[in-house]
Length: 316
Ligand code: GLU
Image (cartoon, rainbow, N blue to C red; front, top):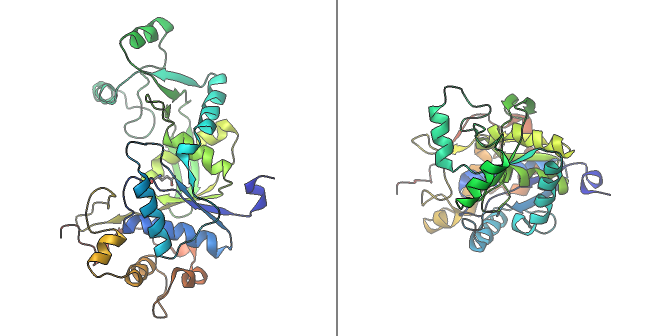
């Protein structure tokens, strides 16, 4: 029996270990956890460490430690995408066998220039691939290979419009584009891996930052092509600093638990802010995350970007 059938609902938090988690990441993790646990259900943590250049074991460990420090727990082992390439390769082979994959030799710069010089708006979200390599013939591909270029693999999409209902954002529609499936360094692409893993792990609810909202139509399209179930989606508005910019893992210095701790901000204070920023009642002193489970109502979550807590000062 697969995981999806064994459990009624499965939530997850899937960070990329490219830096320490900041309070915005922690807030999203808490929503994912509370949503699963308030339904008494399963919750997983998955490390999205496909990019071995930007990811590190040190960041993975600090992220796991910080999740545990704020009181979040999970079921089973933490899964690492870097150990699951065979699954992604299998999915790409499946799409390829159906004529849905093509080689793309473009550099990022060429894609940007092509988009800028094109009179036509590309199909799909901003920055979508304009289709330059879509109809290349073998001699043209051979020419590019001879020039030392390695191809990325892209999905031959049909540019359909996918509509889905997000628990917080409501109805969302987006055009599917020729998304990358495997990068030209051989690394499977995020959009493919996330779809394969959520299905393989029986994930039924995807909670993540709303910066990923525009990727969801392409992920749903991939799910449908691969015959995978569609999870529910909850895109959480991001935490923004005073200038309205979202907190970033690799920017600002005073947004992680360690930074805050060094400045005398304790875990209780951070958890208190996380709870109040989610509109949860702080009706007892020193509430823990477990205390919040019974107070959590997904439909009451705030739908606007959230101001960073007063104890975070990125300029300090
Ligand atoms: N790994 C992605 C990130 O850290 C999140 C992916 C997802 O939740 O679908 O931004």
